[in-house]
Length: 270
Length: 160
Image 1: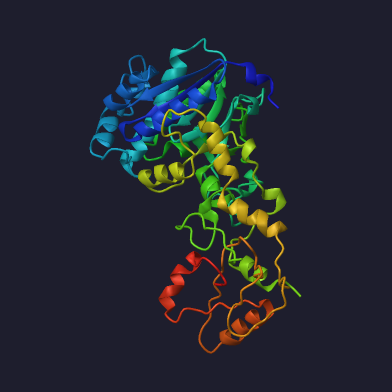
Image 2: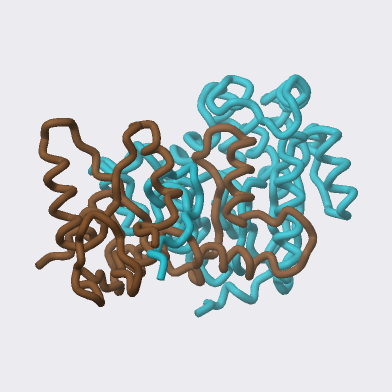
């Protein structure tokens, strides 16, 4: 059952690079087929290819290379990283997770959110930030508590739970470790504490260039008691680990061989 | 008498989820396709599970949900809960070394075959004989161990 937030305007913001063009196309089709009322899709582009792809779909864009009016943004060298990180790689294959270049690229996501918030000072409603490799099956607004500033997907996977297997069903934050609040799927309100949060994120990136964006976001969120946050229900908002590896939904979880795919029915001849 | 083949089948499968761990595909609002190493691999998995819209044909959301609901593992789990294994064949066992024509006993019908791995000298021949006597179904093992790799594709337990 949808709550009162279901009627608020929803801006869906994503971050695209030339390595993720088909994911961008998917997200756009996904958005179109959901037919959400009072919602719009906005794309942060990090290079010419992603910008052209977004424009070809008549999508509004924010170019993270254009940091005019944001002195903090220029500290992060987004121009250089966005170009170098994408140009040297083959199509559809992004930068490897954890590398310095990858870290710099994901810092650009913070610039993306900050630029959007900064340029929409009177913005009302809700913002859903998603990485392009996200699929939406229904309207998320009803699952955002009215009193919350931000709600994030719980990034459940190996290493998160201190009790052994990751807890895809009954997630217990007190028994979890690491940065389990996902920085690639969250809902927020344009509240003063949230506006300050993304300003502080840029400072944090500048001061800690080797810390990835998700770790930085988790650190700042856990430090700031003024922010009301909650984790999105992991039975409704799934990490890739829970969706593909843990939950009994796909052929990959079947025996005897996960590579075989569906097995034909077995029966004796009559 | 316990359903031996069902026990064996269950032993070969990942642990089935408890009722409280059952996912309701209709409840899923969003999925982040992260935690998958390699962007090409990530895309391939998402496509194979109908989790992404690869073209503009309408009805993507419905197809994606349908795909979730019809996952193989779900089917196996559901059947494991409700199927009946006919250890008592419809006709009396008539074990004489070959399968006879006529009504064929069912053995966990529509369930994947399961390999029972063992080493020479551990009694596997006797166990196989016991299973054959108990079920009335003869299934000779391939003499070449490499043939075991095609086990899931063996179409029938009994040939007429």
